[in-house]
Length: 158
Length: 358
Image 1 (cartoon, rainbow over the protein chains, first blue to last red):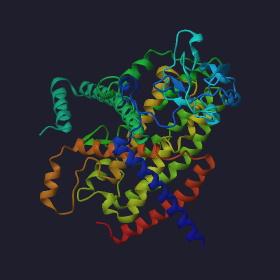
Image 2: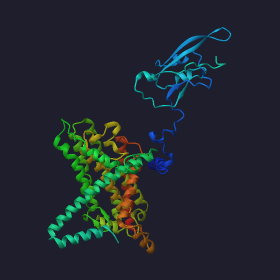
Image 3: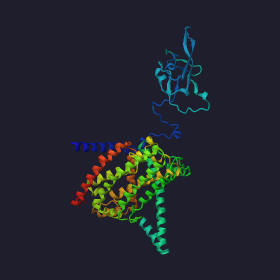
């Protein structure tokens, strides 16, 4: 009985090692599997994975309209105070006062790309962009205003 | 036909006609020494690059490809970097032993080159106990590692050196038994006779199952003996930074690095000689025309081809298997490899007595 276990042990060990070697051998012979990208050379054709998160942006449509209602859910969700929502009151066509954003200030230097603000946003106003060449010469350039100047909220977004 | 043997003979004859025999022998020794050092340098350059490219491809990476065409000059650049680096000796170290250790590692590797048959009749020293010589001299390697670990005056270096000592001492056994398994049917320890005995087929084919088991055990044991992953506890980057060569820098580190690769080459050369016929071309029993065709490939090509195939196998091990813990390492040797190789030796002896091999 002992001998049987012993032989089974050896057999199982050799088999599992061979499985591993088969995998690495497959990668060794199949160079198309290589995932390394020669970055500065292929800047134009860079293939980034879907889940890569570079910075928070606010998409605007052709009429320079965004979907942000100024609810500050993103500001509350942010664990390190990266986002600051500055609101104002706008008078709409019916003469009613309505809350809107003046500026959505985003501090890239504080951001950890945790995605919590994007998850928290009830109206899908912000998303993660795949840019990553963030180096600048002055620290103040990291403080960004996400909404375009003169932009306003899209029709129908509450 | 061009061959290494012919070049050696031409040089030998020319020296003996030009000088008297004492001077001729001295010059020949110098030439042999220079040739060995050149081979070392070339092996260092080639194997380091080979290792890095293979590692990269196995890990779905590209590897060094910037210096020179396809990164071929990468190891050259690394060598220049190591040459110009400062060889620092720590203050608390035993300075004499600290500086001696890398040279012992190197000298052991050089001594091991002596009995290896690189091509047909091309050998530095065909002594009649070649295999015994290799297995005994290679165990001096552990002294240099212990010396480096001890003299560094560093806990982790010492720990790495001690592990390495335990490892080499125990794996020497199964490597020796695996070699013996092949020596039994050959009945000689001389390299030229070992190669000659494989004229009608390599031992891995002629020796049936025992030879295959011995080959596997030999490859595992020599991987452990050369301190390479999955048995690289002596270095164990993630635990002991670099183990016994933590404190070494510059060219002294490079000597350890080089001796590791040269040792890999040597053990693979021994493995190729014992199991795959050394420089002997691929022969099948009595297929005269086939054997004759194989003879047209130069013997040095056969030798280096087989050796590099085994080196590739060892590199494949390194980049596939995870590192063993020290207790697992000793378990593997004493509970598995040693009993199996003893049983295997018995089996081979029975086979040899009954004459059941080809």
